[in-house]
Length: 263
Image (cartoon, rainbow, N blue to C red; front, side, top):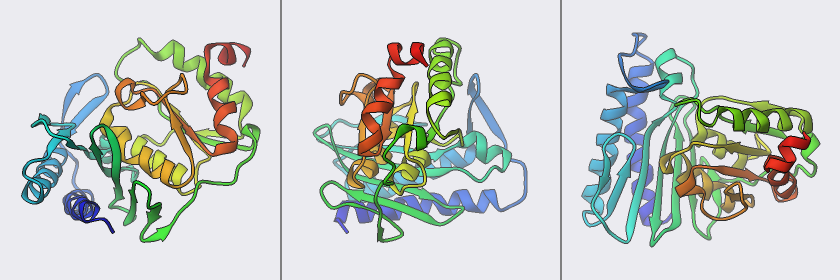
């Protein structure tokens, strides 16, 4: 395992321990509303602090972009952190949440960890070295046709500005695929594409910390990831589509304005 990935795994497991202790305590989780349908708990903050401390100890000169505390520093290496993806699920005791840690070097994703502490599933990837689930190599599914595909997605939840656009996409995908699943943790959805549990995924309105680690997992597992125009700007735009090589282009076409109108 790459030395930087080893440290990221250590940080993810430390955050996971904090999350698990709170999740298994049986008590209600206190939260603060950041904006409409967007919440933060003390567990988010504690998990993020643990991750940042571990990364800073190992790499004091690296920069960090974290969901709760924002940007720290400016450097060639940038750690992109979501300490608890799926906070709403966590608050409600719905066991679909994860820690996500990605690393960019000069803007290129090089390391990724998605850790589900509830199921103890650790997804890892290093650029050029493949993707793994609990140290076993993973690949995207062999799905060949969009009509047979099971897709993950996420509803726009922070406002209404993207809802009409999304509903057109949702209708098109409902008509053209075998099924849609919305579990509420994008990082895990992307990891599930990487290991073949889902055949594809799309969402709009994402943030870099939702995407970074999972996108690398998919490409290292043999899948494809792009923005809705087929380009590489998904980290910045937050508009992402991913899938197996065979369904990726049909999926991208179906999600285009012309495709959704035809759907």
